[in-house]
Length: 281
Image (cartoon, rainbow, N blue to C red; front, side):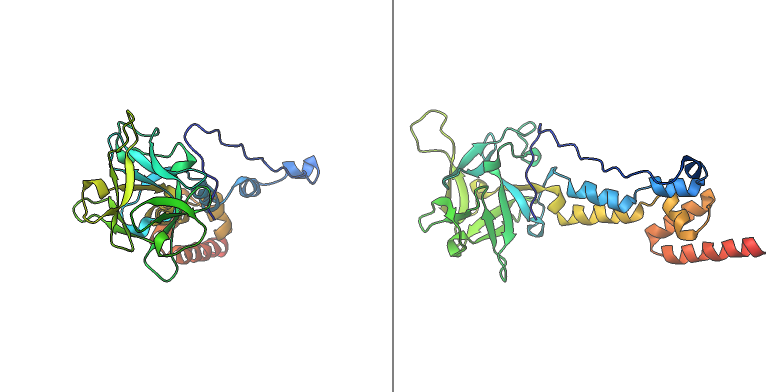
């Protein structure tokens, strides 16, 4: 499910803390041992990391086609950089990027929802569809004009995303007629007219070569890395609860190492057995 978009400078809503009624007498609370208090206070690390991952609204660059999913921004090869955008009636145009450092495309982030498209593969194909903020799909007609007015997917709304062979981290957007999305100087007589985007270029050139920025939580490598780190993290209280007794510092280190290396359950069992021997030995 795609979450609501947030931009730099937006204030994040504070999450409400749920409170529970205190139970038992003050005397009972005072008699709680240290382990019980630790277990009550501890929040599982994996759960905390999962929440952080779900809330990660930072933007990163897509490196390969397999990365592309969820909210994205097309960073076009203009000077200064612009993004592919559409308005509420489906007009497609280029829009200057404000959230960018030193005009470097790999730092670009959207400041306007019109610059954001939701990318998904079309089921049963290698093609992509791109949905605008207003719920309509990006489309390119037979003469190369882009619009975003369609609510259905036809060949006009289907695109291939091809990595650029000699420029890693960049892509070509190809229509099913084998033409490419390109950007060119405006033919308008107006001063400072925005560059125009077309879909009728037949050759791969600098003007067809763009970057794709995306939300970090949808990038497979980052997602897998965060899940791996979440599995590695575990509190002392959780380890002691698993073994059923207090642990020495070296035992805690041993269990954390075992968790990273994949033999955690065997290590827990060994410490349980050791604890029984120490108790009855």
